[in-house]
Image (cartoon, rainbow, N blue to C red):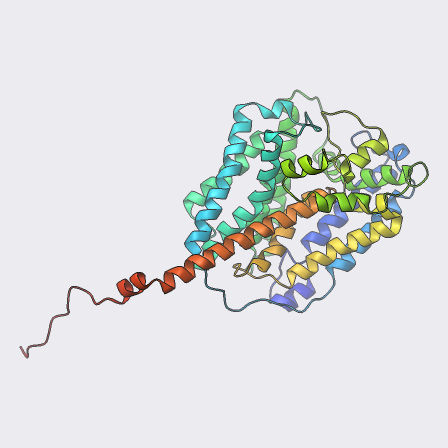
Length: 421
């Protein structure tokens, strides 16, 4: 908090050592405490199904991430924007926002909530579209927010854009999808906190997002007639427990019964950054990724339930405790590096990296390398393309002789001459 105020003159809730650091620390350590101290079990994973070293490993993961997030880089924030056509950017982002709106409306209309989680090993057009929606939505809403901020200093969005954004959140909530909906809410909150804001409002904002996530989970269980007496705290801890149980269950089997992967899942994750239909055609189904390695590791074959994976678990799977520490350190280091290159409104493509990092953080840390890298890389490439095109449009308009002559032509209505009357 002190460093944030020294850097910006006000408390920035999304400083690397605040929201990202706090979220990772709480989501890594609290479930571990609940399992090993309080005797809790999440998604069938209790202390008996996890290594006794799990609390130590999760603490090591937090230390590594915090050290990475706390690194200092020389700021490269641009005082002057590269000329680009703001309307072109806004139009493109608005078109992109129609994708999650259409997909979530389809999910609600077809009752996707009732079969949610089914077909985890199916790779068709519908699954590709769902993944594409989750990847493109953050960059679309960020560009909408930034474009409005560049035009006027007050207000976040127009009524139309508020309607689309809230429509996406509402429809995704009704379809039981909270991850992408929370990305939209985080993007809006990030934009709202780019200036001085009271601590009470910051707490209310984060509290509202937490309440939304819990509400969606409760609604999902009720709609599917799943009987549960879990408290709100238990619901949150279950949602946060992915990193803990994937790391603990992995450490239980590796290297005692299964050898370390020695980087193979990272190589697979990098090769599969191509669009899924292309990657699957070239390399086959993604059975060589971290997520599937974990399913094989614990003998999990249910195609209608996903257990995900996590940054620390994949680090341990490949290189043990050292790999876990380095993976978390590099993840945090990227956040610190991106933070030194950001600004608001976004005037260059590199400035989008940190807000994107913040928005996808809750999903990225509970994914394998394939999902974590793709959630950051693909939107960044798209932003680069959009900014390049917007600059081209701006340059073409400024050098168009017809447009320049039109803008510089004298008015047909001449001012009245003074005839001495």
